[in-house]
Length: 187
Image 1 (cartoon, rainbow, N blue to C red):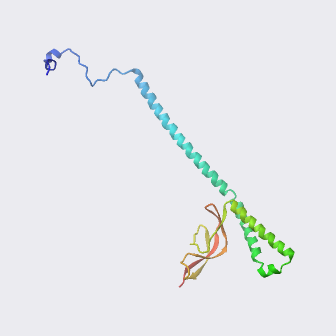
Image 2 (cartoon, helix red, strand yellow):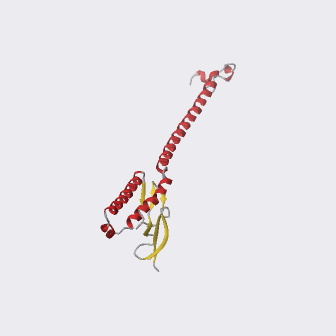
Image 3 (spheres, rainbow, N blue to C red):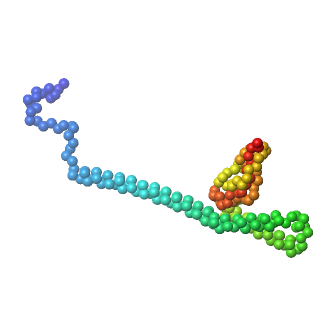
């Protein structure tokens, strides 16, 4: 050990020794710098939150626009479904024998109704309107409306056995439920 470390306490009186624990004198601008750093961090956080909010708003707007485009004509399409039904009924009302015996005018009329029905179906398809396949499917209250029950052992209970009126959907929304007969257990 050296002599410096073994000096008597009396000799150390009056000597100021810098403590390694004491902080150097603070620069008056340090507080201002710290406040500005804190403000910058706060503003950066706000900016990031606003950017995320704007991105969410953009996505939500795009989704709503796509849904509005898809479902825009729903009421009009729902009204046209009865026209499609009536065209189909008109064609079913004429048996094949009657078609074979029909004159030129009647055959042209039948052909015109068939073409009109096909065109209406094509327009429905172009706009995302599809016929709901019901027969043989499990009953789904979102797309089927049960009109009666059919006692049977051929199909499991809750299976659509008969369709009285076709149902239609646009996207995942039901325009009109299919009117159906549903199987139930015999007994």
